[in-house]
Image 1 (spheres, rainbow, N blue to C red):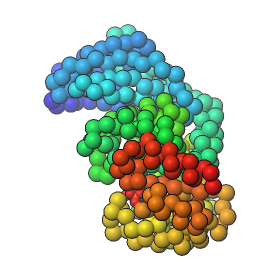
Image 2 (cartoon, protein in one colour; image 1 turned 60 degrees about the horizontal axis):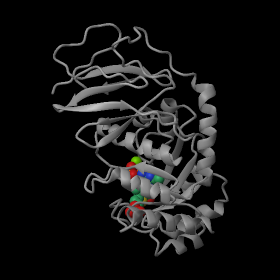
Image 3 (cartoon, rainbow, N blue to C red; image 1 turned 60 degrees about the vertical axis):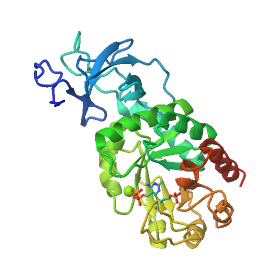
Length: 333
Ligand SMILES: Cc1ncc(COP(=O)(O)OP(=O)(O)O)c(N)n1
Ligand SMILES: Cc1nc(C(=O)O)sc1CCOP(=O)(O)O
Ligand SMILES: [Mg+2]
């Protein structure tokens, strides 16, 4: 199926296209959103539409769930190949994808300033309280993403990041919509890795940047002040800088141990955790790298009060129970 962009500005759709692209605005910057359906879908309350992706007809229905404070987006559930896929629509207004009765001019975006201030404040308070930060892939091998996210978020994960390296942006956004919906159900924070444009399009609460990723000011230029930004640090100088750098909301120090999740990354070990603890910074920071329930006490003894984990939860027999144990032990310190 060849997709061609179509603007909902009164121009005719190209006949060759079964998909459409409409432009929506979140913070003044135009963000292209591709709606892949044979029929124009109605992203307005109560709509049900049939759309086609790869030839399969599937229902699209509006979901009337209330948003949590952690979530700014709206969520529709659509079904592609049998599995429900939540799609979050940014903005307080239904976005103008409706063709029947669609506005010919775009609905103005919400006034971000007032509406976002409370949300950003809430998100920063949640970050301050956070203890367990999970990075996970999209569970394509297991095929259990929704169940997995519900289990770990109910168990005690405070922030969940989609970290699935090499995924194309469109697919990442599809998965992020599932993450966003899960975070909204549980009132937890959603994090995007590496890409400010994807964080913006997904309506993420958090963007995580490594030392080689986009510089913080460049990410802030895209995201504004309301999205939380985190930094990776692997050396004392980097941790000291991240503790004071403008625009940084939290940072991570590690790896505590060499880890196959980040092959080739030198592990500064628990000395860096001890150094960071000694900084005495009020800025939230997390230990990362090789942490599991067997060595967590060493991480705590080195002075960390927050941890980022991947395998210890994603590969656990019972991810929800593993998350709960991490949360319990990090919170009782
Ligand atoms: C919460 C969190 N901490 C550290 C990282 C690692 O970031 P980075 O060094 O950019 O490496 P990649 O994950 O991008 O491979 C992270 N993603 N999240
Ligand atoms: C993604 C990542 N970043 C690191 C850093 O030190 O910045 S360590 C790491 C992988 C952590 O995975 P696991 O919990 O499976 O060891
Ligand atoms: Mg990165």
